[in-house]
Amino acid sequence: MANVWSSQITFRENELHLSGMPAHKLARDFGTPTFFIDEADFRERASAWSAALNESFGENAGHVYYAGKAFICVEVVKWIADCGIGLDVCTGGELAVALAANFPASKIQVHGNNKSVAEIDKAVEIGVGTIVVDSLIEIDRVAQAARSQGKVQPILLRLTPGIEAHTHESIATAHEDVKFGFSIASGAAWSAVLSAQSHPEIELRGFHGHIGSQILSMDAFAVSADRLIELMGKYRDEFGVQLPELDLGGGYGISYLPEDEPLLSSTVLPFLANAVKTSCAAYGVDIPRISIEPGRAIVGPSMFTMYEVGTTKMVLLETGETRNYISIDGGMSDNIRPALYGAEYITVLANRTSTAPFISSRVVGKHCETGDIVIKDIELPADIVPGDLLAVPVTGAYGRSMASNYNHVPRPPVVALLNGKARVILRRETEADLLGLDV
Image (cartoon, rainbow, N blue to C red; front, side):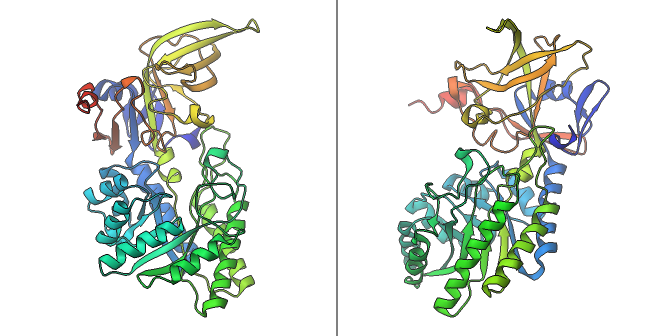
């Protein structure tokens, strides 16, 4: 199961340890549920993606943009800055976090399919490096913001290459019937090119393509790159100059189950380099500056969630078999992904070793919802009791980011561990926080 745990996780003395600290101490000191993030692992992954991009593309390497939607807070943005990579944000809130961390605006890329006028004005005002434009209306909004501030704003056009990526439909983003981007096949992409060219306040730097999330096969990435580069060739033929930048997005899959084979930076970047070089040669295009956007692939495996068992209940099924329902003190408020699109996880008994037989089990949350299931079907020891600790790995991406206050449950904290020391980087919400919104 090594591929689902961060590099500083060990199992010794009958217990899970992170950065040398045992599970029972982590639970005692910080409570449950809590997200624990392995800072060393996060930094190693971020640096590995950056190094692989530079090694594969050399002088044509652009930015590794960490996708803030996966998980963002001020401290993590500071780590990103330390690693020398860029940051992709898609709301005014995410941009505010970046600014609170004093992240360099020139290395920020602003995304999103419905940026407000205020968000665009702020992005132009602080001098973000790139705005990824998603509609003709946004082109006009960016032009107006830049004109009013006496600036020229660099942009990329987000394009839809018409690809059915092999992932869940809720996280596929490159087919035609989707809210993101300008379709290449329908001609919308070329209309966007012409619109951008009509505004002197806009500098069209290139194209952007993102085909989805949690993709475990590289083939679709090559097809997407080819279609984007083909359009770059058309632009060169039409205007006599070449667009200098191409952002190939992210979506590189990670291991949620032990049998999953993740897409590693050492595999992804050489593959992309070969695909880009092949397509550029085919269309007579110089290799542009290539950027990518791994978010989940950096933070996902770096974090796990610790829960405490509250109750257990043996349920007799219609088949005559039994299933042990194990209720934990969190659930869909801190991990909505299983309920949202059937994401699968594993868990381990973290505070002790059991010699009891493994039995059919279901790990469920405390919310008033039948679908509040963290793990639908798993074999766990029969002697799990209230007070035991369960650790669920690979919760860094979208766990805390998509967390809610359903049933007025305060959201868990995030605790970072490095070199045997733990510190809170995002505190636990309290009931006072929730009541503080009432007027």
